[in-house]
Amino acid sequence: MIKQPAVYILASKRNGTLYVGVTSNLVKRVWQHKNDEVDGFTKQYQVHTLVYFELHTAMLDAIRREKQIKKWYRAWKIRLIEEQNPEWRDLWSEIT
Image 1 (cartoon, rainbow, N blue to C red):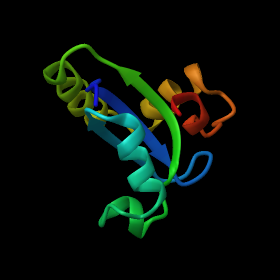
Image 2 (cartoon, rainbow, N blue to C red):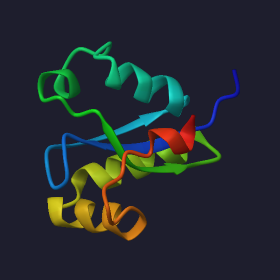
Image 3 (cartoon, rainbow, N blue to C red):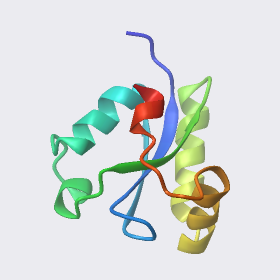
Image 4 (cartoon, one colour):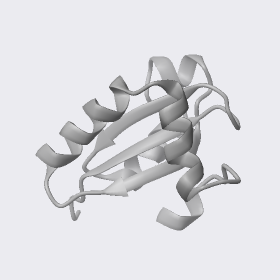
């Protein structure tokens, strides 16, 4: 398995509940969220749609970025998503 640090945002629907996460294996982690293998927030609120992701070369950079985005206002997160994904498409097919 090749590790590729990534920050990602999942949504329950367009302009719905958002979840910001970090991982070293984006495909595996999103699959876990989509299949409710991760107990907690995303399972409870049905937050399964990958609407944004960015890849990093180092995990420390990805963790810093995740923490930065988590502190943002909701409107800033929505703007970030819509700059790259204005239709709020599920990006799952782009990573698999």
